Amino acid sequence: MGMTMSQKILAEHSGLTSVKAGDIIMARLDMVLGNDITAPVAVKEYAKMGCPSVFDREKIALVMDHFTPNKDIKAAEQCKIVREFARENGIVNFFDVGEVGVEHALLPEKGLVGSGDLVIGADSHTCTYGALGAFSTGVGSTDMAYAMATGKAWFKVPSAIKFVLRNKPRKWVSGKDVILHIIGKIGVNGAQYKSMEFTGEGVAHLSMDDRFTIANMAIEAGAKNGIFEVDEKTIEYEKANSRGNTKVYKADPDAEYDEVYEIDLSAIRPTVAFPHLPENTRTIDEVGEVKIDQVVIGSCTNGRLEDLEIAAAILKGRSVHKDCRVLIIPATQKIYLEAMEKGLLKIFVEAGCAVSTPTCGPCLGGHMGILAKGERAVATTNRNFVGRMGHTESEVYLASPAVAAASAVAGKIASPEEV
Amino acid sequence: MIAKGKVIKYGNNVDTDVIIPARHLNTTNEKDLALHCMEDLDKSFPDRVKAGHKIIVAGRNFGCGSSREHAPLAIKASGIACVIASDFARIFYRNSINIGLPIVECPEAAETIEDGDEVEVHFDLGVIKNLTKSAEYKMTPFPPFLQAIISAGGLLAAAERKLLEG
Ligand code: SF4
Image (cartoon, rainbow over all chains, first blue to last red; front, side, top):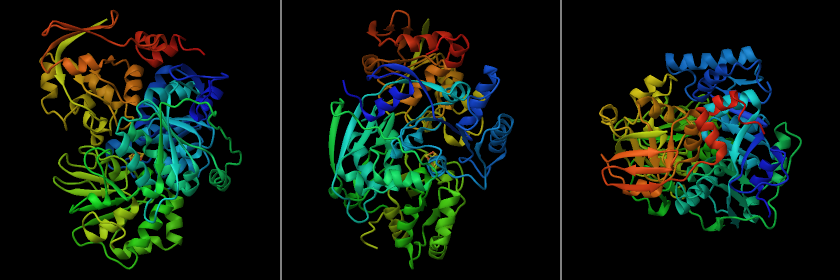
């Protein structure tokens, strides 16, 4: 029987000629990731194992991005545990303040993850790297500890849903609208335990940044991973980001899928997810009057250069609405620098936005922009659960950078077509 | 192995942000985490667990959201003996197995069991007994590989005993 893209990568990494959905396998990993929330737990567990050394000093990435720059004493202590662990074990890819970026924007940019790789991360949005044609998935800290010791993880081989993308998205429609549209269609557990495989001629019309956004939110449909077919753009991206050898895994023509969806990209409208689930989507034409208090543009979903460029195009020469606070958070130092060189940061500041150093910050209600009771935010992040960004009676509306920027100007959820 | 207690019932899509809000993730101490378990969803949670409600029963997609292992840890440290749900979000599922929090997927039980029912989960027999309603539900058994991890007491314990070579 044929295999899906995801199954092929899993088979290859477990030394098997073929695997099928439901098999439990032990597989070799190309990269193991943890952050300042999950790595301290893993470090504690790892210490209990009494291992003489980590499996590979270069294949572990430790990224201090969530509560950094340290928001309080406890957070500082957490980072310190990881910093000391990194030093003692000679971890090559340890990223601290000044160099750090939001992990899922940082690792691809540094060429640490790439096509054909098998990656686990103690962070649910590790599925982001599927944009490059990697099998990557989020796990917990115990998995991370085990992986740091052995370079391996157990997997239950997933079945898959295929999304055949057609045509070209219209102006102001980006990867965020595509994935929100899909989650609205299949629901927050529509792809539970499964792979979401993206293919079709429409893929060529999506930039790498669009693909990162889409793969990033596969978990929001419950998926184990999201993965894109590798094409010219992937190869170009990998070349530009110090990663020469693009490894291509194509699904077999007779691969079995639980479901196949055809998605007409040209029919998708700018889309917003209402509180408190990413599946509560409405097109921009259906949102009605929703006044907002804050806008956040950033995160591993939409804090990349293209996202900032779109936001800047809308905010240029305009001012943020007087009742609205706007936070712009470039996802990595490289993006920050590029945004500076292109003059985007100037546009933001002149429009009345606050620009922050890279951090997860408000995305998980950590720091840098917490919401008070009754406040509403439009965010380019990926989750709008109860209390995600602050008070349990605050509300988060998920949207693209274009919608977020337009809303910042209007002081209510607005279409980029209007401003 | 048997888990026994009264039931606390929740709905669908209980996410890890309500199980343990991110603002409390600046610690890895299980007891500290347990203090805040479910506080955004159910303020009465700690008191009810103390009063013998040791089984959580929930609907679909329990544990969705972030990969934080703090979530099953907080539940376990609160004194919960077992979580029964229609199904679990996958990272939560694997985290629970890896840290040794017993979890059971059983849509029928999840639907029929009500808040306050007295329930016994017989892991070896693969049945859930509802003592209040005198009903029994069959649960899906774990595959042998996962059984090995659970009976060893978690992933790392299983690794120590070299149960997972391959
Ligand atoms: S930006 Fe948000 S979703 Fe992404 S890794 Fe950070 S906290 Fe998680």
